[in-house]
Length: 305
Image (cartoon, rainbow, N blue to C red):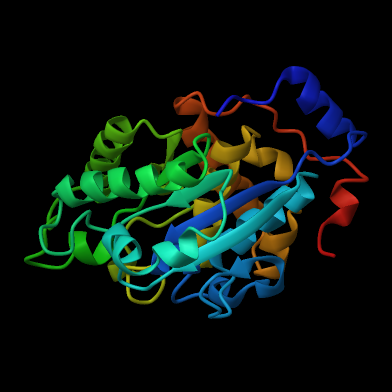
């Protein structure tokens, strides 16, 4: 996906451009998409279309909120199933997924790459290829994005787990390596480096790297209570990375008064730092142009409606 031109960015920031043509985006995933273990799961369900009619808002609803605040015209859909990899959607949900041609699709597999063989990317590579081929049969120009997920604390700090004893950043790097192989094999648009953004949040000092020994003062826990799924902070960071990657916009432009963060009870400093972590990851991959200025009114005035 090409980044927006400087001219189009200027028009957006001045708040004088009309909404662009509608973009239909579909999220395919599991509990890491629908927000298990957090209030994000049923957040703003009326703003997105759950193709499974399960009243899910999740990360897609956060993404929709961000795009609305940026003055962009996105129609957002989701198709999710807890504990599933892409193989489940291929075997059971193509009739739902194939109802329409999509402009953009965001998808991911199981959190360890393979539930039966943690760290092995072979199933991910195969299923990404099959799903991408199906999506392209509906729209040859569809942009496919793969979301590389985060390090699981329960897989790192507990004994006898695949990443036991390794640095917390390592699982995210190993998962990303698998997604890079899958992305190259299917020539997708890009990988959403969510796991690495989580690691950056820890390095920046806003997120605690080990929830098992307590959460340090003035830090957030990116995981929820099972130390596996994300908290609302973790899903918020996921959505920021996806937003920046799909739109080319600096997530910091949403500003520290960003509406969804306010509704989820985050402080301005937490919002600022999470946006910075997302930006740092996106910039490292040359996916966004630095533009940290907060979106001005009248665009900003539309938030929290």
